[in-house]
Length: 92
Image (cartoon, rainbow, N blue to C red; front, top):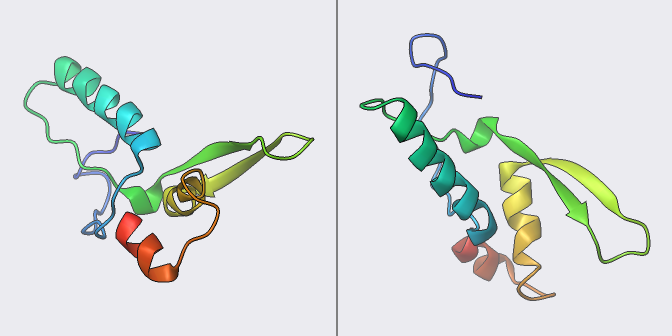
């Protein structure tokens, strides 16, 4: 969803490192958006975004609908099965 600053009250986004798996998609959308709307500034509101994650490590496949912050936390477990809070904060 793309919102304009005149129609939606924006707050300053929190410091957040977008996971690599999501960064590729965001970068592709930024290129597309800039080609369609030259001169407009695109600001990501991660606190307002969400997505679906498919769980593949169980026999049954599950799809979770989660916030972007929750997705970032869950995606770090693709790298290593165990994390400390400090290491996870650095990663996200």
